[in-house]
Length: 265
Image 1 (tube, rainbow, N blue to C red):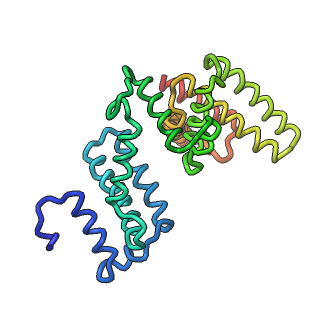
Image 2: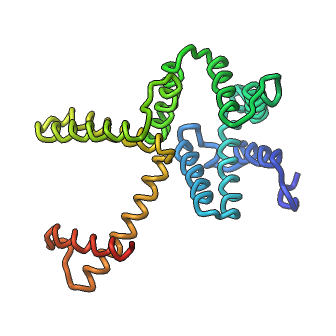
Image 3: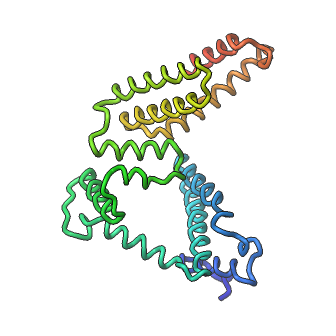
């Protein structure tokens, strides 16, 4: 088949092209790749797809989803060459999972709203994974996830047992408590305890976000953007007033920061 002559391509064409690229007469780079060598590529392409979603760029999203799909095809082809599994097995597995975990759609279970649908999903998931407790479900949360996301998932599983704050206010008080413990660790100059207490502060902050129905990962993303924007304005203001930021006292720079903050509001 001469792929260059086609006007439109489909999923099967993608699978075949990846096979050609990995073949002896294909691309030297593609042939050399392993799961681990392209691990970071998978992460990068996923984040680029997320950026397209965040910026509401539909055309870019289409492109980036294609790049994510390419990663799936590559990893599947690597295993196909070992006679382990292929892309059809991947599709078969996810289809079976979707059918099994939606008994309220493909079975006799009734789910009248989103909450009941999620409860049904979780019950089937724990059963199929032979998880008998939420602790086992927590342990199954991937350690490769960004830590803020992993924290949220672990807290959500704890909440299902009733081990949760009644409101964000209770979680906020716990955050204050953890901050005090971090301060004590700093004053005692205990580096190991500082690291532990800082982790508790971050974990508690995620708990507050969860109870406020705020995505902590997105909130921090926005905070980074806000800081970058304000810093650029502080830098421009300092240049305009002939202030050397490297030698200026922090109090002066903080004053510029407050000025920019007030102007933005």
